[in-house]
Length: 439
Image 1 (tube, one colour):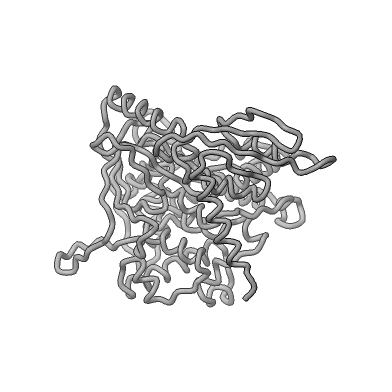
Image 2 (cartoon, rainbow, N blue to C red):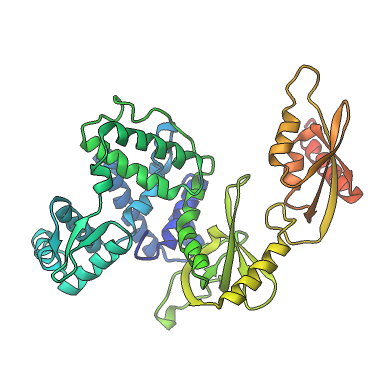
């Protein structure tokens, strides 16, 4: 992942995807909490990355940036929104330096000093030249993320690109691997790492002589239902690592209800502004994915005993902090599990028993209603079966999260208990019905 924070770019790209470029420059800058000048710089940088990744011609790169995010079915097999992960939000000098290093190590192992000479010879004249400390820092970073490997046990160490597993595969094995990764990346969660691996395999196949549209590389095309949600995975792996290492995290949080979704970091106190975000220190314990709306949630504890819940899309400026003792972590995790044991998703409200009657679709029709209830009904049980339908019971923390699921069955589902939930849904259906009254 990126070496620098790119929260601002992620929030901007999400707004572009959700609004199809409906806002102007001033409106985007206002919602990001930045100046129009900073917005223009960011948009130019993203456009450069997009044109590089997509290898677009001059005609494509000249059009409006929002148009580059409009997609068709073939485009969704290579999600345009992922170009930010590919571009890594690196500075221009850093991007060119890493490219030179990786290219040099692809042919043969190189020492740090040899790589320093290669970078100094290959860098553009307008960019500052690196020193030995910078090169060694780059090598440490690349080794840490598994891109390169160190050879030898004594100095001077040599470094080599870590791609043996690809080069040892036959053409058929590589194609089989690509097909498997292609399916998994487009149908499973999380997907970002799968898309990046898929892209690397595709480039290797093209280098080996395969032709994109003629040798079966695009055997299947997919449409990601929650297109902008791919970007919510930006912090996912950092949070999973923090959970594994029992570490606290801190971040600036923006609720989805606020008009602003990001705030600039102002180092000059004369220009410091109210960022409207909430600074949070949290012990992360669980990450939950809502498949119905495509949302990621982070659950954990702050200094108190209340469960804290955050939508991942509102998290910015994430930082991993101190380690907590194992006994404290286990105690909080056990408490969280008890609180969410009866949560349809993440609700921690009061428990309530819900009784529903589902109606069968009719004679000689496959009972897709019962199949769906059994598949999606979690720990609920079918307690009684009748000729026209069946009774389903479940105890959940509150009704807010289960109500959309109940409504999705339409006339095939009737709420029996509790009475107040039944009246709530009656009122909602009447309101919906009023929308369709003759004008």
